[in-house]
Image (cartoon, rainbow, N blue to C red; front, side, top):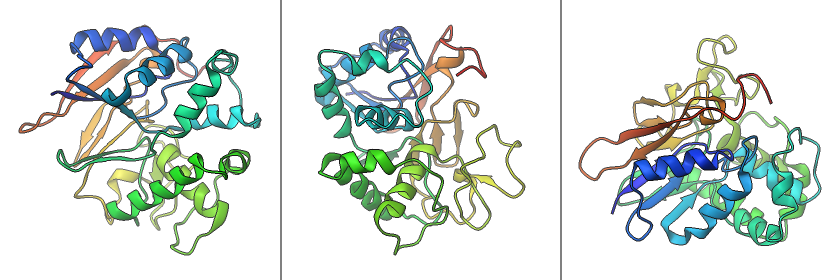
Length: 279
């Protein structure tokens, strides 16, 4: 059995199919791990969503910020909606089934035997792996439970910036959401620096990529993530960024998680659905 972790697809269905052909994916024996953001901005979000759902146990996907945007839209929250790429999903005859499936996806996936964890964006330095998994479970329970609608109305915002164990209610859920689905940089004191988004070197003075925080509690754990297209494919320490900018004319990356050897990236070149800087 081969396991491939795949970076942000964002509706680029044709490129995903090209990558799956390149790696000779066999759903009967292989497994795919998607690092979130299956949808939005690209031309065929509906097809991507249907495909990954149809793979059943052959695929696992964690939720990204664009996936959460879709869930918020499904609940009537249009406060951050800037793109028309999700309308096709919201009008599809199987929309309710797709939304129900999506809201039951994890926000963090941990494979004990292979020793990898997968998230969409980042982890704050204060969280150990066990804390991260527990926080993921809290958010997943909210998304799957009766609090789903309210969460979708109140999830947006950059506060609070600093983790505390005694955070409660939407403050706690919003911090967890921002860490798992939006984080790129942290300030020196461990606060989430949500306004920093560009390549390393462009950030606020003293801010560091989350994976470079010197006191990060998960520095000895192997973490796969996406979300950061301007970073591109990057392996550093025990982390692998898989968002290599397919949407923007980069590449779609599959990381082959081999049992006894280092992971090996395989990539499919993409023409790009959007030009950099266009939204």
